[in-house]
Length: 181
Image 1 (cartoon, rainbow, N blue to C red):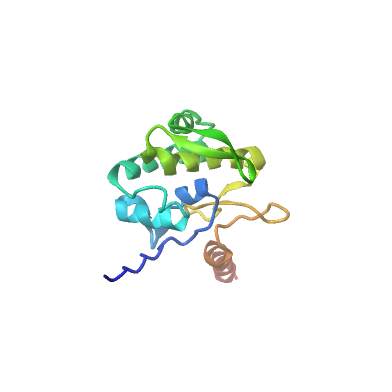
Image 2: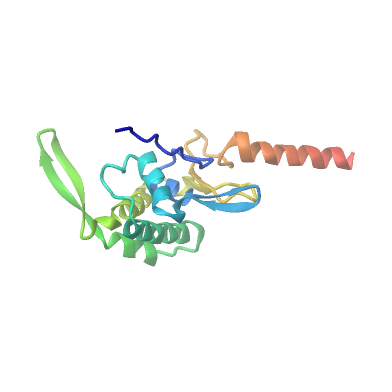
């Protein structure tokens, strides 16, 4: 029996908090929008990237509910305080206080486990809002759709990646100055 190699994550930006990482399952490559969550296989890649692959199945129902959570979080992040969608997703689970050998803890519980990944992302969005809502950012490059949580010391990060979008913006400014000269 041979083990199959894990499918590499094709996204240009990973490692953001769960809510923003879910938003970043859509990105622009060469002018076209790519979507990791177009099928259960892409969901499996995203679940694995976030350590959720052992807890949740990458099936059609989980994909459908994760996409609903992504749309709700995106509406809340990019729109004028659209809270209904995120609140609806959060209605599919709860946090249960627990006592373990290590002390007090919490455990997420779901009426329907297929809501689990989306619910966890929506919950993470609430955590980001409660810690530093002004640090939830959309990349400043006009052709980029990625989001990030600004962890810079002074809170002035503008680009999803300095190597990608930041460099493109600097190159565009340089080209414009050279053309005008």
